[in-house]
Image 1: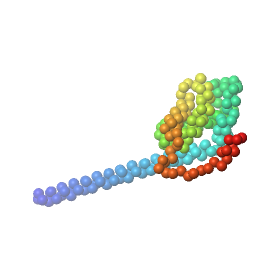
Image 2: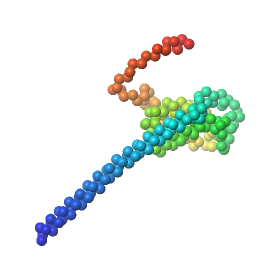
Image 3: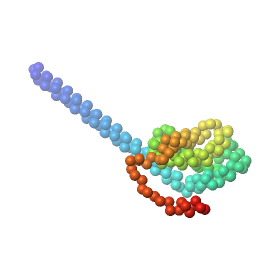
Image 4: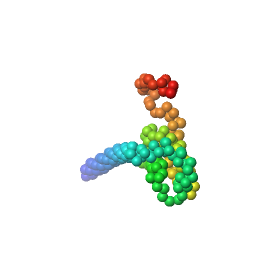
Length: 192
């Protein structure tokens, strides 16, 4: 009777160990699937943001910030309109489209919904450029609204500045040779 009881104990223990192994394998598979799902979601978010950046209205707003905003800020009425608490009309202030986009992206990066490294690898220079152009707008917006106005844009700009300082030549792999590219027009362009 003791031998049969011991044999049954061995079988029972083996079954429990087998069940534990199956549960552990399933848990590992679930973790792997969750990582793949997260990567897929991050990629989808990044592609959506890139598509938004290329939309016509956003391109017009970006162009406005590059070419006309500085002159518009010389107008006291334009600045007063920005400083006033309430809705700022993006038709009259296209820079708001750009501020809003960068602020939303900053929130996504800050909350780790988009990978910081990947986003900065693609857009760090763009972020710092537009922060330098839009910081005067942000400071006007903060007059009555407070320091938290566009803080996610500022956060993103700080990350981008640090990233650029850390990677002044970009992130091209040092072990991979670059193609020799000749600038045939450099001399001509420097003459004009």
